[in-house]
Length: 401
Picture 1: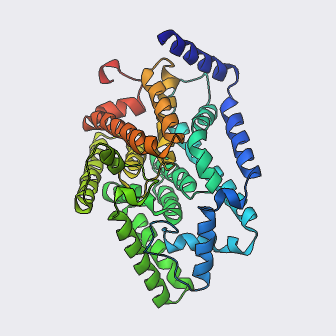
Picture 2 (picture 1 turned 90 degrees about the horizontal axis):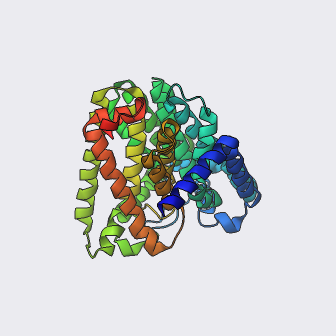
Picture 3 (picture 1 turned 45 degrees about the horizontal axis):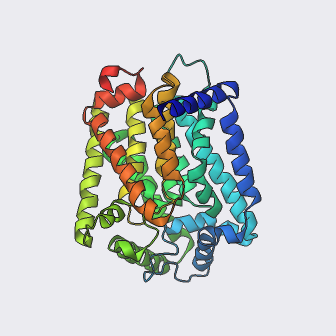
């Protein structure tokens, strides 16, 4: 078995060396196929919901249904962005959105790789490594692209924000987070960490979040907008208080605990989320205290992704693309320094398992278990932040592994 794994590793490395653009080739072929196969059957349960909700907003009808855990549950500003697309054919609207999402996702991957690539790596360029990162994410992207999920652009925007932070471009980073939140509010996790820990981003992000909530009032009657926010709050509370069995597509910490026979009541679940959020903030603060803009910005991204994929009450079995992208970046960063680094290969394996669809039972148990293991590793690295900084910013020190 060891020999087979070693041969497979060498084959992958030699293939990338001989064909350094294989990653981008595979990724672009994947994007072309998904664009060519765009049809309402494939995005009926996702992007079509967005368009229907945008139609209801334009018609001053109720957008949110608090009595169901499904349907539209993002911020009203998301529908303002989609409103112009309701005037064209749904297939064209989906294809155009998918194209924009794919560009932002790809740009986010490239910019972070370009910032993190260690000096002195001459065999491949940042662009070539980014292509491999994207290729690793094809399984995770497949179902998200099929449904034209907003999570694609949110993930790319969060990565681009992290890259901007690495260059101390605080306004640009805030703008990217504004875009991420506008499309999907889960990007608030990273934004809130930045508000607490990055003074230069505090005012821009507070203004950005205020603008996100205020923009609908410029286009619609105040009473109508207030009623939509009331419906959204009611719906989100119902989701947060829901039981594991109420939504069969869930895959998070509580589906794992349920499989182990541990039923967590709603108040306890909310308390656990609060504890994890404080722990996430503490780890990010530890990394911030150690200095190092690259290691800190990337820590914010990967910690936010791990929190969302483990604790979000609507994290689904296909939602792990938020984590698989930074995992693949970290894996390729390690392998660019040392192609035999077993941690890089394990991270790629984790990204592939998290990205693929197996079955609802497997995904509800194994995927959150993988994220828990990754969380434990991140805690080990960041609790002594020099370990994390050495991993991200410097050639690896065996003593810090």
